[in-house]
Structures are given as structure tokens and as C-alpha cells.
Image 1 (cartoon, one colour):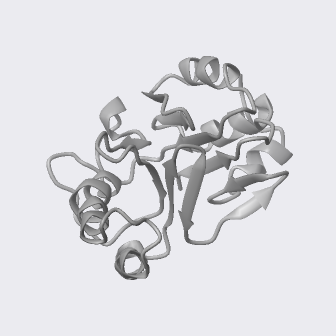
Image 2: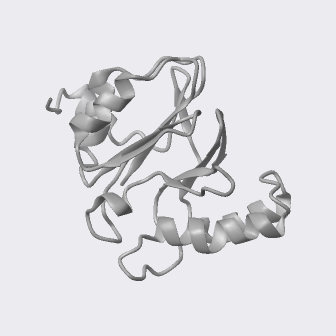
Length: 182
């Protein structure tokens, strides 16, 4: 199962051991975005760490570590996904109730073909209750995060540890048992 970590502005970045444990549990690609709109999608953990190390607490940080349940293992299918018109950055953890097509993941199909249209129908208001009714109807227990600047909007059950929001904590087994690599 993928994992997302959202580090709000003003909160310290998780340590290297935590980030490594999340990656080791989810090795099919990774990505990050900050509140300034800088986005990296990669298959290289080293590239990801170089980008994370640049972060200061002056901006938020979104991390995603992928398990390929739909779509092949390639950079294009890594999260986060970005909409250039709205500036919204999106990441997903779970399985959505839509079929993949043309090697696109359910995450990208949801974001580009559903969410952005629903958002447009709600006049761009990400807080519109109708938007969230539609999201919840297809979410299927998934955890979703939408980043606009430094502000995140969440759907699903998230866990907060030391100020960081995690979509799940399955990766902690690797951390607690020192089952990770560098």
C-alpha cells in the first residue's frame, strides 16, 4: 500500500530513517512537492532525498511512495500529480473505484477526469460540500491530499505523528525493526 506524508509549514521534516522506511515499503516510485509548487517525480530514492534535503520549514512538504497496483512502474505514474491551471497538487493512497486506461493509474484518472471537472462545476471552491460528496462517492476508503500553496485538504483517515500527517503507518514495521537500507 502506498504511503503519503504531509509535513505542514513550520514542522520539521521526518528523519532519514523514517523516509527510508517509507520508501523501502513502497519501492515503485516516489515523489514530493512543496508549498512553493516545486514537484519531483522519480524512480530514484537518491534524487528524492536530495530534493527533500533542500526543504526548510518555511514551506510545507508532500511526500508519496508508490506501490504499483495499477499502471506500470515509470516516472509518469508516480505521484504527485499537478494541475497547471489551478496549481493543485494531488496524491492518493488506496484503490479508487475507476478502471485504469492507457497505462494511467486510477489516481491520475480520478484527478484529471473527475476531480478537476467537479471542482470546475463548484466554481473552483475546494471547500464546496457537493465536491466532497462526489469525492466520497468514489473514494472507496482511500486517503487523498490536495495541496494548494502551503495548505492541504485531506480526505479519508489520516494519522498525525509529531506534527506530520501520514496516510498509513504500515512502513513503521520496517522502522521499528530496523528493517531498512540506505
